[in-house]
Length: 213
Ligand SMILES: *Cc1c(COP(=O)(O)O)cnc(C)c1O
Image (cartoon, rainbow, N blue to C red; front, top):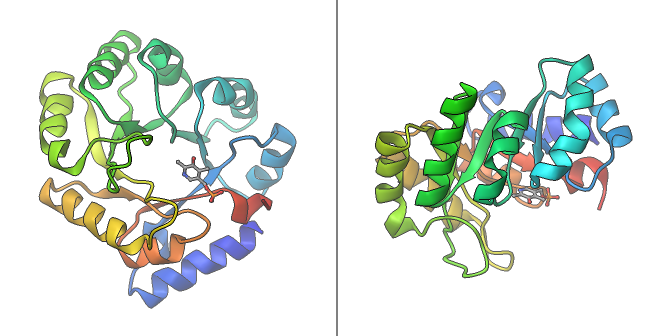
């Protein structure tokens, strides 16, 4: 299934006139045990996504003993009381979405001297139950996160509403990133990563297409 997803990414990139090497597959391993992750590592997959700090702590320190080049992205909502562990275990934080979290992360990264690349999650569908900053509040959060909290914000991430066509959301995210000159776009999941690649995704977060539902 990894080979299949890789081939689909390559095709989608080619169709969009893009270099497939500019699209990073983030293998989403939430709810998957180490026994299912190890075969992906054996096939040279190195970038993973987890949505909970605790799950990443349980799985990745051991895997990293054997493969020091693994990169684990946090793709789920982060509570401020977990920033210490999050900064320890993750390599990229994709879900910066509010001021107090930006400040907490900035403080902790200084303390640990681990200045991780971050993305701001944008709630493009403005869904009340979903994490992410509203598009109209993005610029202000970006200023605070970079200038006050000292975070290295490199891009934007979104999870479009489940029952809407995703493309307008991908397009909006790209436009917002362009407005801030941010190079990274984390968008697209199993159901729609090809469309996301057409809209400029640099990171696609794929779970069920790799592992089965
Ligand atoms: C679970 C999850 C994914 C992967 O979803 P699939 O549909 O299984 O590919 C991507 N992004 C986030 C934020 C997730 O929580």
